[in-house]
Image 1 (cartoon, rainbow, N blue to C red):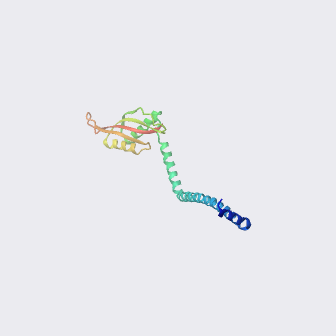
Image 2 (image 1 turned 90 degrees about the horizontal axis):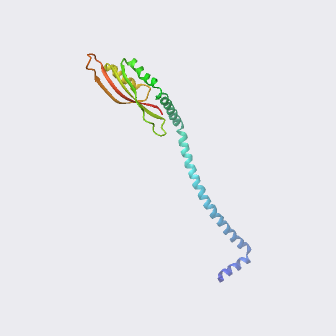
Image 3 (image 1 turned 60 degrees about the vertical axis):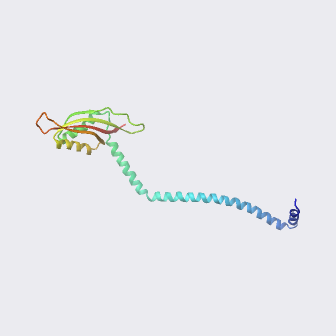
Length: 185
């Protein structure tokens, strides 16, 4: 050891209060370093908790709007579910179109329920296609078409063709339709 260190140790042995003070300073410095690092991690967690709290406060302030949107969404889903077609009940499906035949004063010449494609994996819905041939005046055919479009069933008219009946002298027009209706999978 060097001479200066030996002199310092001898000085500390002669003065126990000074040596215990120096020892206390070294111990407190080590504890301070440990607590300083712990304080830093606690401060980071506090900031993350404050950000989460502010986010929750913003979410809670918009809770009424979220609840209103959720209620409207549930109502819309219930309406869609209630108006879905069931592919197996063909007489009910055809009856839906015959009901509009009576109200719009047209004549359904032909109605065919076509084979439907398999639904997509995990889908609750599928498409059932229908082929219709309707005769009547232009106004009545348009009323039939309008009734289908505004009816409770969710459908898409894929093809629509008008044709005038040349063989008879009436104002009769034939309407050929190809319709996709949303159904339960």
